[in-house]
Image (cartoon, rainbow, N blue to C red; front, top):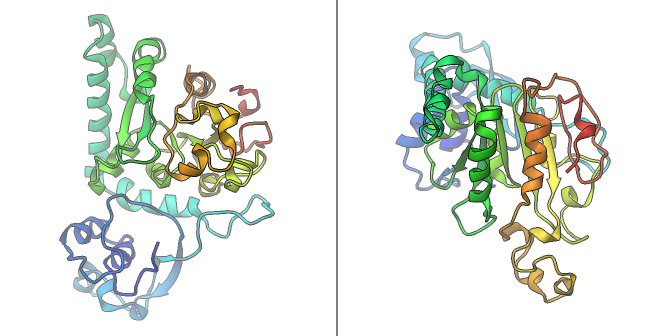
Length: 356
């Protein structure tokens, strides 16, 4: 994205996160964006930010919150701020470390915008309760009674990312959601919901929605960075678009992390990436004769292509990670060199047994 100017609404809002979390939302709703380089934020996307310590007297007056001025804070004190810097990615030779500490960013933002705000935590609980009740509303009476006999945290809510825009749509998502309702709801207490950020653009709703889910599945894209709001121990399955040998690095290699894997590295989340095959391409139908130059791939590049996702991929993910009482894996690191799993998995001792 464009460089954030010193006086832009985005930077001022981010700088206000430390002491006044509401400033982030207040400025998004109340400012006139005309003349700013960043014109709108239909989604909250986090990449390329890091924390640093600065003195209050070094900040632009607009970047010091009114609350701090009213409290007569010592302007020589230091404060932690978020600053633009870096980008999502990995060096050519990945050594397991990244210059950007997204795990620290995740901890910082969750504390300021969720954990320190009882009203947001309450909204998260309400969202979970309503989601569970809605899922059981069409079930038999004995199934609906399960909600009264179990805590909401004993249910697993899986969000499936959809895009109602014209690119990278999950074409057969309805089939997966229906299978979830029929096969996973009662035996495994798994509830599946569709999450379309093109429809839910309110920042408050986006944070609450992602903080309420236990697992998230979606096609590669900027919307996946919303995993930053998920609770500790959550699982993320990133479906990688099929590309030719000249495609992106995160599709070509199966022993190094994706950009999303870099962001989740050293965090308390679990990340699994699965590269889709050419059978996921709706126009080509998996026929190699279409792969010559000038064929359908040239007309529909991977970054705008819709995809079909085979149900066996989702079934394997649910069976290995989300079914039964052990679905919340321990926080231990395992390697990711198994074919077709080209990411940086975290926190799952039985990851090597995953077969998809």
